[in-house]
Length: 475
Image (cartoon, rainbow, N blue to C red):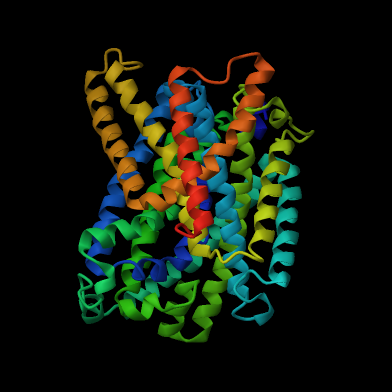
């Protein structure tokens, strides 16, 4: 990837950000939100999300410009600021979040096809898993042909999947009714929702999942044609996707009532458009979802492989993951990623886990990488590192970093103890790869304070395993 012609331009970087964020989440958003909150809490939640995620976008933009030597985004920032184990944990958590999201995408894709071909059921029948497996390996071998080629295809699918979303927004805006929108603003008719704070908390992990990918351009900073394009792509991609998400969610609440939306089958966006214009609306959205998921699967296949490759390249992960094939694709990292996806696809045959539980777990896994990135931005501003002679910029970046950090902490609280413990259960086994990398370098496994952090992770994992065994905790 060292040749100039193989570097990624601004358009490709924006497409990676947008393509990573717009997957299946936006097509299930009306039902996912309505099942947890009513209009008032939804608006408050989007306000918090817009501020928090915009702060994170600015954090990634600022770090990309101030630390150009730190390629690979979330992982590199955690390592530079807080040590090798924190860097490894960020990479490990990000990687698991990414491929777990892909498992959810496969389930949703074939669940959608199940609306027209009953043999696919809810996306976890033997036929659905067989077809998903074939699609998984088709994407795998496409990516093996080269990052540049896969990124070009991602640009095409990104454009193709945005078109039906814009059409939905136009039609839903025309059909919007204020009397439906304001019928029960605070969800008083549904006692199970709890108070407004509870409703806002309950919808938070959904908003995180639909924004996962905001750091996509940062992951590819080492492959960007111009370093300054990384920050631009992050902010432009975020603002565009934010507008689409809010409009899709809010307009749906003015087309159908909250109880009606909450009862819909996913992808609920298809049912909303069908409610307005008839069966062709559901077909249009289903086609858009299929294109969207195919593009998202491709984006995340690229990102999963890249994060493992980057961590192996600087020896945080074992060196075998740094191997590139003749097309400069990190093939070992890609094989490991897609093998894990295949295993979890097979698990869905016997597991009671749903698309929603998969996206919640994927969201919880990425909270730690986001938190450490925000914390590193705050640390740079407090130290004044890279801010010599720029006091005003330093104060601004400190405020933005603190907002992003508070938002990340709020998300950990909103996710609740269940997903915190399940995350610990998935973080703990990563020490095997971390230990192998340390052995390859002849270094001790942990520093003093890293031992305490790992002990806390192991304790959380043990509690999660025991709770799953006793039935106190369920997936």
